[in-house]
Length: 164
Image (cartoon, rainbow, N blue to C red; front, side, top):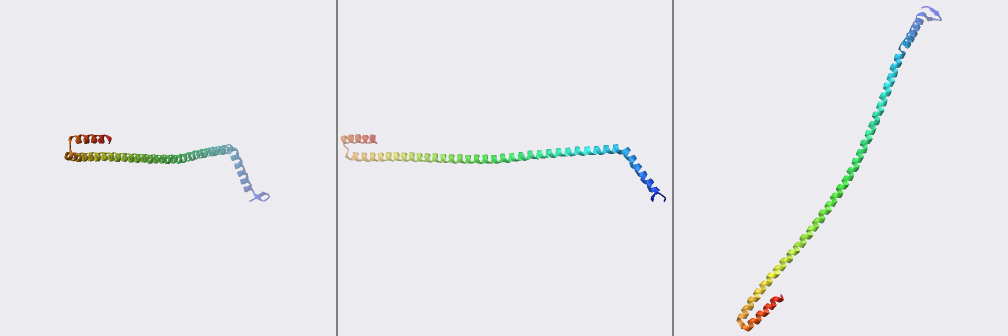
C-alpha cells in the first residue's frame, strides 16, 4: 500500500476515479432517458391529479344535485301532506254537512208523515162520528119522526155537513 500522495493508497484513488468515471459515463448516457422517464412520471402524476380533481368536483356536484333533489322531495312531501290533510278536512266537513242535511230532510219527512197520519186519523174519526151521529139521528128520528120534521132535520144535517 503505497501512498504516492499524502497517505491515500493508490487503489483507493483508482477506485474513486473509476467510480467518478462510471457516474460521469452513466450521467451522459442515461440523463436524457432518466429525465424523460421522470418527466413522463411527472406528467402522468399531473394527469392523474387533474383527473382525481375532476372526479372529486363531479362527485361534489352530483352530491349537491342529490341534496337539492332530497330537499325538493321533502318540500313536496310536506306540501302533499298538507294538501291531503286539507282535502280530508274538506271531505269530512262535506260528509258532516251532507249528514246534517239528510238528517234534517228525514226529520221533515217524519213530521210530514206524522201530520199526514194525524189528518188521516182525524178524518177517520170524523167519519165515524158522523156515521154514529147519523145512526143516532136516524134512531131518534124513527122514534119521533114525522114527515115534516124529517125534512127539516135532513136540511139541517146537510147544512151542517157543508159547514164542516
